[in-house]
Image 1 (spheres, one colour):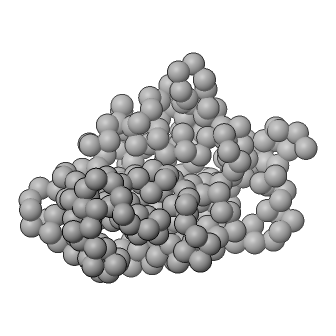
Image 2 (cartoon, rainbow, N blue to C red; image 1 turned 30 degrees about the vertical axis):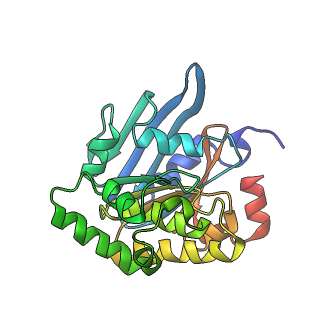
Amino acid sequence: MSDSVTDIFSPEEVKRQIMALPDKWILRFDGLIAGYGKKQVLNGVSLEVASGEIVALIGHNGAGKSTLLKAVFGLIPIWHGQIFYDGAALASPKPRELLRSGIAYVPQGNRVFTDLTVQENLEMGGTTLPTKKAISEGMERVFALFPALKERLKQRAGTLSGGEKQMLALGNALILAPKLLLLDEPSLGLAPPMVSQAFGRIQQISRDSGMTVVIVEQKVREVLKIANRVYVLRTGQISFTGAADALNDEAKLREVYL
């Protein structure tokens, strides 16, 4: 099979599908080009995410999925194109400013401050909140979602299990009650029985709070169970966009993904 995205959907067809989607966008990319050093990874990505939905980004390693999230969160420079968040253009976004504006990012690998306690990790996650009361209220929201963290409040994060570290990594973002949550492979390092539980919790959080979620994930079948829509990236371009349940058919999934 050729690597050309036009083997599946032409750029015109991708644009037509995007234009047919809802009007209320919280996140939009317009012709985004970015990369590392001199290496270009994203080749003119355009996509939209509606407020309150869960959108999955899938594709093979090196397709540009994680790069896309890093560009949104200001971790790598944007070479060309534009990102719009909640109706406003993001010009040279900086992570701390984005946290204050309601965007939170959870990188892959269950990244927590291993030498700090669970409580200290959550306090670090809430540093952009205006008051100690706001941090305390945020921690209580996290404990309502992940009661196990409250039981390990004084325990060093480095001694937690893989599943508990993932809870804490999510908690460090959720303490801010973000409008938009960017997740990079939340299943990484989790035992198989924990994967479905983790995705179910993400779906619950989005449903209960109205939070928008953009999730990069290699466990494709699992993430499609909770996503509203899906984008497939291939060589830094969108090769497919549509309803997640459109890929429940094995033949269709293989066609757009392989």
